[in-house]
Image 1 (cartoon, rainbow, N blue to C red):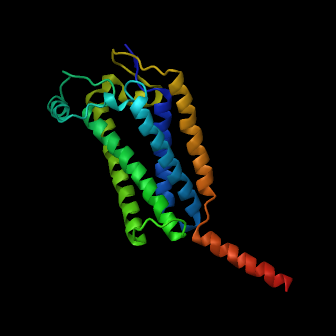
Image 2 (cartoon, one colour; image 1 turned 30 degrees about the vertical axis):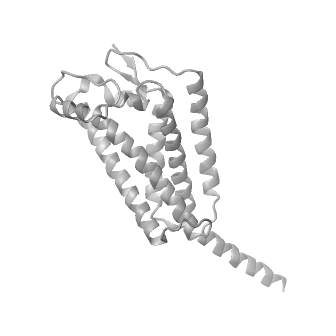
Length: 231
């Protein structure tokens, strides 16, 4: 018996977030690719913002109401993990906590990145020391990476000990080998999902066009060279 658990918007978010964060993290070490780092970082932040909203009024299993994060659920899950006495259709208790932390840390990382950019380029003064902003941004990115590692470990562990539920395949197909109620998207969910992926794409484009200190420096040099030729 297969049950449709993860809707297409949820699965798209999952993969786009993975790609977006990975690229942004790698590009953070390359000063000459700073604009791409801006773009992917902003893209990730916008994606997560809409996922947080989707968690408030989205369909079953993607909705935060379905996340069994209570302490009693955590204890029960840990005690019965190696048995088959209880199966969680959507996120299990530990996965629910990790997912919420990924969303929170992810959006804080994007916000800190923008504040750092704003401070470095005199766009906006947050009143926070530039050095502290840089350290916070790097720390949050590292925490995000650790959480992703825990998430991947959980998926692997679930595959080893609960193979029949089909956790890994559900990331691609949306279906789990379990008997329960199928998730369902209504008209509002579909309309929201379109905005969910269009707006982050626009944010990506706008963030890529942001001027940084290096760009401004190059523009000044080109301007001086141009006026020098006129003379």
